Amino acid sequence: MKTQRLATAAVTFAVFAVFALSACTTSYDALVKTVPVGSGTSHLATLPFVACVKAKWATRPLKIGEYSPNADGAVITVHGATGQTMLLVDAEPSGNGTGYTIYGDIVSASAYVADAHKCD
Image 1: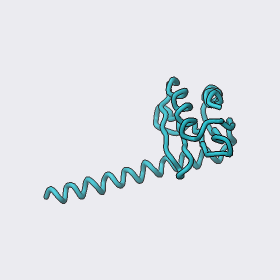
Image 2: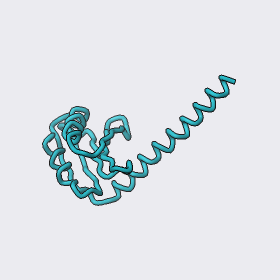
Image 3: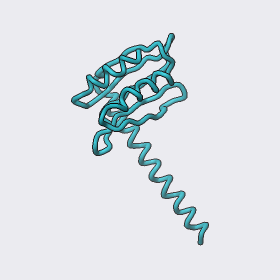
């Protein structure tokens, strides 16, 4: 009986994880199909750049998150009150640091873009 409950719990967790990951991908895909609101190149490597941007964005009122779409890059997300992804920065390694593009659907995107540029 205990084994059956554990198996059911594991399946339930897996289903929720798949839905959560597919929501991130859908939000990411929808935003990257829009016109970027900012871009740049940082002298920092990808992980230090991401840490810098997260520290700057953490002072803003909206919730932030992070995930890695591949082995080298990182995506930082900004979520609205209902959990929807409203802004994201896609950071990838470049020749001398990190190249990044910011996509968004948010009124105050300019403040987030300016914060990201402080990490150049």
